Image 1: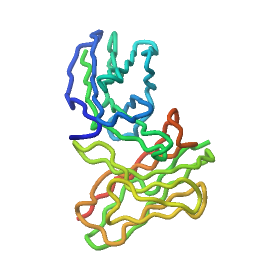
Image 2: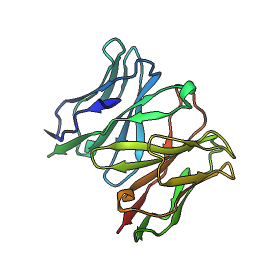
Image 3: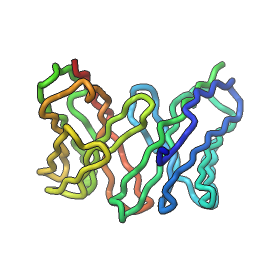
Image 4: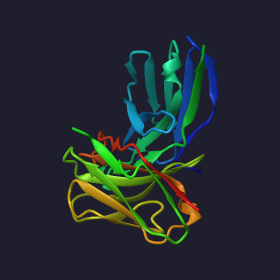
Length: 112
Length: 114
């Protein structure tokens, strides 16, 4: 079983749609959680951190369920520029020298 | 402030050749990491460093060596390249290892081993 699992997609949605991505992680000792965005042939870049209480950044909402070991990302009012691969990332904390564990990514294609 | 830079951007090698990938960061970060990214596999940690003069193995270290002689540089070496090492290599750096810390990535090096 992979440590961080995501549905690879692709998710093909029209502009303006709402789309949700899910991610599960296996290590219950995981300390913190992130969503990264990776554009085609580019490096991953931090999109947002995920907090236990849930957090929102404009059209993006991230939620964490520690009991179920489940993370989600909701994108509202999708734009063409949201087309990218979204990586679910888990930080195992300082006792593991800050290692990040990456999911394989979920590809989103927003169409006109 | 260039962030994290990688050299070269693209390289083609023949099986058995050697090469060194250079990663440099100007953010005074203590921690540096080398990953490889393959289709359907996500990013996998090759080696990492928690400070100048230190290195440690990650998830997939075989066939690679690293050195961190200066805080700002982290070198990844392939002594005898194999086709299985065809991949995109990303370097990353982080100020620390705390739970809230994230990593900053370089633009990547595309390596093709024939």
